[in-house]
Amino acid sequence: MISRELAVALRSAGLVWHPTEGDRFQLDLPNEVELESEADVFTVSAMTIEARQTPSGTDLAFNGTTEWALDAVTLADAVWLPREDQLRELLRGTFRSLERLADTFRVRVEIAGSVLSFEHPDPSEAYGFALLELVTRSH
Image 1 (tube, rainbow, N blue to C red):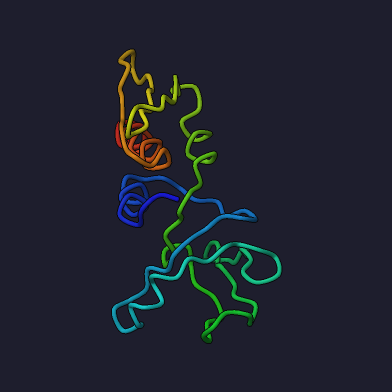
Image 2: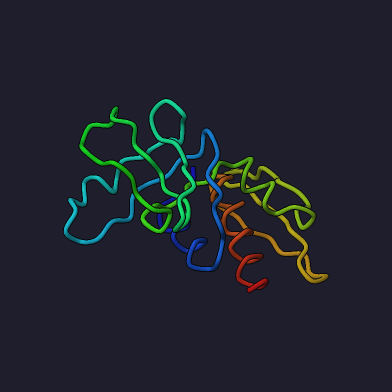
């Protein structure tokens, strides 16, 4: 799972999230809400938290099984934490390779004819940094 900081950077760069079953996220609520709640990781699931289309967009509806009372939040109040496979899929045709080095992983992508490398001890983070570069260049 990628770090919250990288997830926020991806969202700020323009990555759009269309919630599906199994997606993980954290809350990003106004300051008056306890910061502790923002550290919790939630999973989209028809049983507990489902994505519902509303006239104003997509809401994440909490179905009464969470630890504290919360009916729903908008996507703007959530930070998607994409999995490694989702990050790789989002890289699409730019992805060239994932290589395990002695103490890190290297992801190579090709963007606009240039091969770029991103290294991190966690392969998800390496994929995330590669995706951040791709999203930043495409906006």
